[in-house]
Amino acid sequence: MTATPMPRSLQDLAEPEPTAGRTDRSRTPTRRAVLGALGGMAVAAATVATPTTAQAAVTRRIAESFWRPATMGAGTGAGTALGAAGVRIAQPTGRFDYRDPHRNAGTVTYETATWDSPVVTPGFAWTELIASWNAETPPGTWVQILVRGIDALGTATAWLVLGRWAAADVSGGAAITRASLDGQRTAGAAVSTDTLVTGAAAAYRSWQLRVVLLRAAGTTATPVVRLAGAVATAVPATGSTAEATSRFGGTVTTLAVPTYSQEVHSGHYTAWGGGGEAWCSATTTAMILDYWGAGPTPAEKAWVSPATDAQVDVAARMVYDAEYGGTGNWPFNTAYAGTRATAGVPLEGFVTRLADLAAAESYLSAGVPLGVSLSFSADQLTGAGYGTGGHLMVLVGFDGAGNPVVNDPASHLIADNARVRMTYQRGQFERAWAESGRTAYVIRPSTTIAAPPTPSGARVPISPGSRSVPRRRG
Image (cartoon, rainbow, N blue to C red; front, side):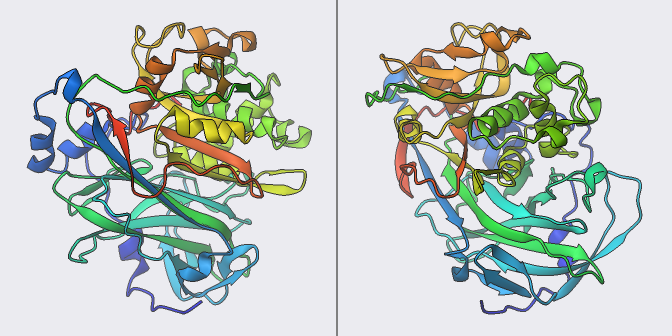
């Protein structure tokens, strides 16, 4: 890998000032709220008249780019080396003084190296970007993920942080508290927990990812990053309630994903959100890991009390975002999954967005369940028995009519694993899923080849009213 000079001050890139006045850290703002913080251009976009049903079909574009060891050589490293396992620190090129704001500890000096992705130009002006990564972080090490947007003239934003991450938590020996950095803003873009959101007039045509690898000064351990990338989407900001229903491709299957209710864990471990309503994402991730036989071992679960479905408690601990104040950080969930293995084969996990349920079918037919993010009122998803501003569940298959079969960890808000398996109406489900931009967790063995999601840059019909970055209970 070729070397590039480090910026004069890594601190300048790694420590953007958070927005003052944020008091509620348990919820992620809707895209409209984030856009409102970016200025008049976003407000104007939000005042477009609601179209009729006949006018409702507009387009969303989706493009994902991920790098693994075989392709990471296309990026540019400073102080890193690339091997079969991924990118690691070879010769540090910088130092970073960091005082963890989420624990009572002093400033620690870290040595740093960086890996920059190629500049990605998806072919459209994107408005949202979600990064993903898989890494190993031995004690004393961690990684930081940054992104910048680039407009048609080549002008780039400042680097914005999309995650400060270690595989363990501090009580388990991690160097830092795992956290996002909400409230960052620059040049028409803002960070909402795990998503970079841009204003309608920003017109960012390209993006670039930076992975900072850090280790305690004077030590020799190194993080190893084996997957990094992002999915970018162009999300309309107008209002509508209409939503097209995709055609069923005929793949009738139900994967044997175990059923766990998040309600069983109500009141558990307040340090990581307290279970129940707060653990939909952690429960979703735990179900998928157990499907692959990659859940925690008995020794890894031994600390949990009560021990019922202890893998859910472990997942909550391992995905908790101290800044967000919950377990619903999307890439933190897939990054945890990426630390696990099945039959000696590492899993990979990443966040993407799909065109529709027809695109999801290709994953299910390949044996890959999907964690999906939905938002709906109590009367918009028949049979659910509740409404939510943001919720995660596992898509496990389809019935003969093409209706999605899911493991819904909040089903009827009843603490009963037997009530988790549900079948929902296809059209209602697609509308609820569209509220998150059809966000999905892909968690699978790294050797699995599943049919790809929407081709890069493809146009995807959606409703103009679909909002992204919903509030997430988990």
